[in-house]
Image (tube, rainbow, N blue to C red):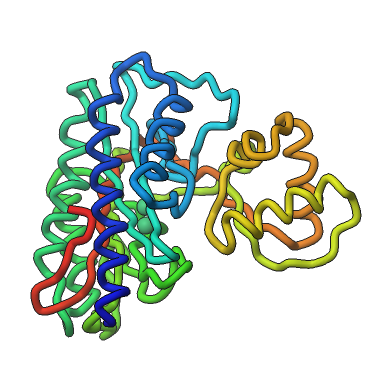
Length: 299
Ligand code: MN
Ligand code: MN
């Protein structure tokens, strides 16, 4: 890996680390998810990074892909368990990291399960390591807590401006001989749940979108939104909230424009992901550059 690129990955990781640290200071029962997202995303920009995706703040049985809308009033309470998933990029070089927070002692074991699974997985990362061994370690640690890993969410590779690419790093045992390679950039993200261990898309909650194909679009309103997306987010996921705030549009106007872009195949959606049996979910994640002495950019 070129030194200049390596430094960008490391810098993105450093900013993500600081953002996580600050989030741990401000997240207390009674805070709104919107306040958390606004503060942390602003901090990322102040530090010279860009959010690689909207700050994901997924409560309880939501595993991922919830981010507040511009007028969201959802409050984090002392009963909740909250996944904070933070992405930062510098010129497209991404750091992706997540942790889980709760003030309810009932959730301590659940939080520990994904945290210890991530630690066990990180210990195995090196060039030539079998991915199936990492996946088995994740599954074993989570099951040792009498909880289930989420089967249909995986870790992933990262590339310039690409949030999810090969290799997939499953959270359950797999077959095959795929191995990690030197200088791959990967995110490992175990999810643990008290439920069955499967998520489904929650079509009623879609706050995150991504540009897929730039094509002509009929209405001026949708054209303005498309131009804003192309200029500001390129191929990285963006929040409905960012459009509302950036273009000073109402939620209604924004959703109408996004619907037109979606119906024309221009943008795709990331619906919130809900555990199918309404089990509570925890998640921990780090980004690693695979080397004999691996660089965990977000730790
Ligand atoms: Mn993530
Ligand atoms: Mn990830």
